[in-house]
Image (cartoon, rainbow, N blue to C red; front, side):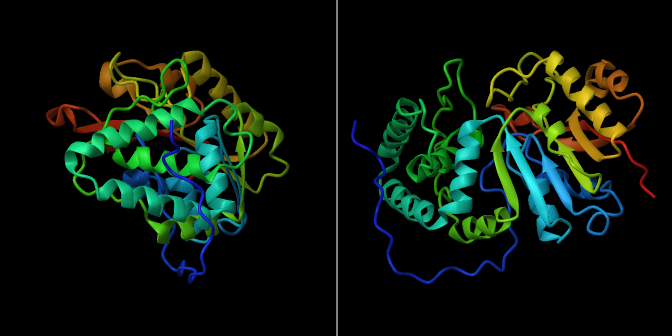
Amino acid sequence: METIVSQIAPVAKAIPKVDSPAKPVLKWAGGKTQLLPALTAKYPKNLGTKITKYIEPFFGGGAVFFDLYNSNYIKEAIILDANPELILLYKIIKKQPDQLVENLQKLQKKYLLLKDSDREEFYYKVRDDFNSKRKNSYTKLNSIRASQIIFLNRTCFNGLFRVNSKGGFNVPYGNYKNPKILDSENIYAVSKAFQIAEILQSDFENIFSMVKSNDVFIYYDPPYRPLTDTSNFNAYTGVFNDSHQVRLADIFKKMNEKGIYQMLSNSDPMSATGDDFFDKLYQDFNIFRVEAKRMINSNTSKRGKIFELLITNYKED
């Protein structure tokens, strides 16, 4: 099949200003932007003074990292995710923002010039091209693939990033009137923010060997434990089941023994169904329940307020 986006030679142009705050590049199911007020209220009080290093092992959209960076709380960071496509995108943004912007400009122009009836066909062509080349596609930087990730995220249904059992992106077309596929100002702002970060594809358990001192703040935002059989949106890396949640709690406990400041988010099965899974798992730590809003459901009447857990291992004062 013909490549949807081709690499194009760089052209001379003014580099956009990056005075605006960096924000997530992707729409992300379970993203923390809406919960930032609740999260910031629970940050360690010595962030930016004693604590200037940050680790996030389930990076996703990165809302908390960008908040910390924009607030000048951190000087260095390690950001990890098990999803190789996501890490590819972020490495491209860090190292090749110009090329990514140029590829996205081309994709956006092609898409927006199409009639509504032809946009869906174009979406599936990009998706097929993306899926057909996924094998070993992350072993080297590939700005075409990175631009396809953003395009698919911005034009697919509900901005999900979901893969099937074979690793193929399988979210259907979203049919939005005028999606913002390219936000060049934010790409450059994010590229600047990423200069302080080491970006790794890795399992969360590997963070234990990365912590060399206790001037570190770790925020965990793992795939949430589903409250019902139909509420599982964590398939962007595969299954994250109760055994993984227990492994994560073990890491949390070990890091606590090392004196590391930690915060963790997850679903709240106790409020939803009376299930005390997390209350038992983190019974030795601070457990807060914060109100959130369920944003993803094909039936808008079922989108509403729920509770999520916020767990810390340090005192607030």
